[in-house]
Amino acid sequence: MADSSSPNPYIRTYAKDMAALSKKTEEGAGVPPGSPPLPAAHPEERKSVLARLSKRTNKEPAHESTLLPNTLPTPQPKAASIGSPTLARPEPLPPSAIPPRPKVVVVAPPPAPPKPIAPPPRPVAIAPHPVPVSSPPPLPPVLGIKEPPSPLPQLVPKAQGPSPLHTYSSDFSDCIDTKNASAFSVLAAQSDAQPVTPKPVRTSSKSRRGLLITIAGIVLILVGGIGVFAAYHYVSTHSVVAVAPSVPSLIFADERQALVGEGPQLVQAIADSSTNPLPDGQVRVLYLTVSSTTASGKSVITPLAGGRLVGALQLSAPDILLRNIAPESTVGIVHAGSETRAFFILKVLSYERTFAGMLQWEGRMQSDLATLYPEYPLPVATPTVVTTTKIVNGRKVVATTTVAAAPVFSAAPHFVDEVASNHDVRALKDGHGQTILLYGYKDKETLIIARNEAAFAELLNRLAATKQQ
Image 1: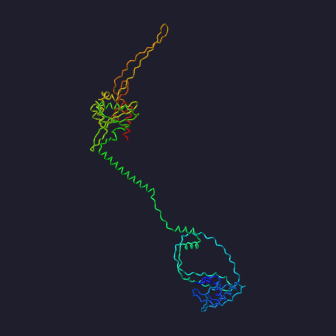
Image 2 (image 1 turned 90 degrees about the vertical axis):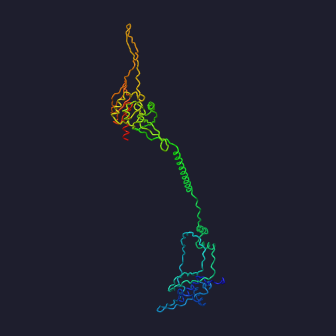
Image 3 (image 1 turned 60 degrees about the vertical axis):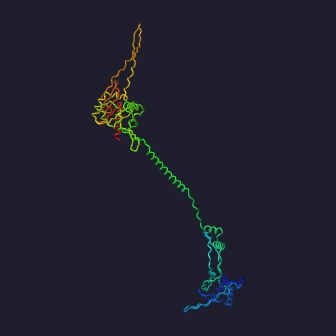
């Protein structure tokens, strides 16, 4: 092991480099790049170099061990090539001719921007490598002296030995020294470099809600299917009474009412329906129904047209009239004027035959339809007051006498020809001129029987509106 007091031959100093450069200047030859190391210098030459260096710097000679290594390479003269000029060795200048060195002003560099914190390096085994020896800074130029080119730095091989052992503490210290990083920044970078373990993903509430909605939908579908099956089973095993959605009628109706019975009973049912309140100008259609059973055992109630109801009244009308009334007729109640009475809209097959039958029926029509179209009550007779004036004993006397009213007599109702709503009609008038009933034709296929002129006009309007629809 080398003595610690002896100078290290591998440590370069400024004095050593200056001595080597001075010797090269005196000899006028340089060491070509890439040349092998030269033999050690002679002790006498070493002393002369030190003396010159001390004389040039006007300082006391330094110790040999601190300026030059033990083996300082000695440059050898370079062989001059053919035809190349030979440079003469310049004489050294006196110290007074050497200009003073300029003062160097050190300017502090601007602060460097903060460096990003990098993760600590992983431990890597570093193989030994030669350490390059940096060259000394150049001397100021001397007037009249051309400086030879400086030789390339020689790589001094490092003594072979076992590779150093890298530990976490050494890497941590190196990172702090080389990157000027704090311990906190190094630890933070190391923490960032560690692999992140993904956290387990929790099942979101939305997915659970979607699962619950799906289950609820499946349950509802099952319940609906069971309900449909139960309804089908009930319908197939039980008879259901179905009512036709519409009633056959020649005019549109505001109300509908089903009747039962026949003959006088049916006539009285129509009269009772006329006593039910009905707004002015509205119509209630009356009809009969018939029950039937289908092949599947269902009971169906079907409304019948008004022609069947006219036949069920069992009127004493002539056969020529009854045979020419079509089933598509309508019977109902209409509120017109101040009364609510029955009406008949008869679809006829022959105008001539039905008109002839109506003329024959005029003698019995009032009695047959008296329940539907009663006569108006007779007016009440009022007593008459008679005033007389007499002169008694020269005085004027006024006497009042009440005479009983005579009973009111009315002529028998009779049919007369009239015009109602621009249509020829036959009206049954009583002794006071009031219409008990009337009949007339809207056209040759439609015969109308009503209470008075107001009812006849309302039915004409309904027929016209229904035909337009």
